Image 1 (cartoon, rainbow, N blue to C red):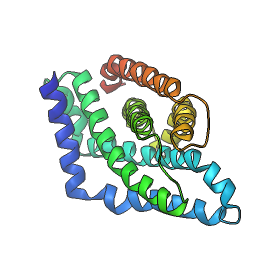
Image 2: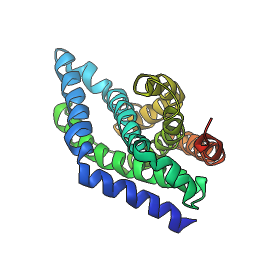
Image 3: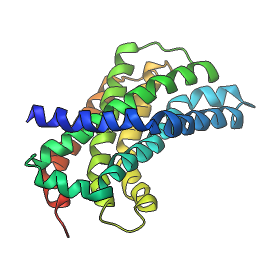
Length: 222
């Protein structure tokens, strides 16, 4: 099982490395969003600093939609999805491999975004442990939900516009939890942050469980 998961993840990451879509399209889009937020709220630096966590995670969720669309667009060409179905790989292994690949891509993106936020928003990172746990758990939850809806999008017309409408509402709990925990890590809030991180862990586990169960019927022809 682990070998199959890593096989799918390596395939997706290798294709992404060769195509440079993340570096050439998704990363510039995310950085542009961060920059535009900085310009829009620069009149009141206090508002910009208070909203740092929320703006960061909104940009991450938008980037998640693009990464998920890319991850499954490569399966729509030349019957690759059918080949995966006939390859003998367990559907749950294909799903988890997709989740791993999407998570790795998003984590790499988020490292760059945090550096941009630290410079443009004059942000000082304080709770490194809480922030790291929040980033990993929130990213895993977003990738788990995105991989489930990504395969649904392959069966729908207009998937480019429908995927955000389907995925973003499901990620609202991730946005709330990640923003609240990040506020504590950045010193914007005095409340406890680890309960929010625990909530993110629960949502990530639920999304992974549901995705593993539902991916098999979703891969089948309608």
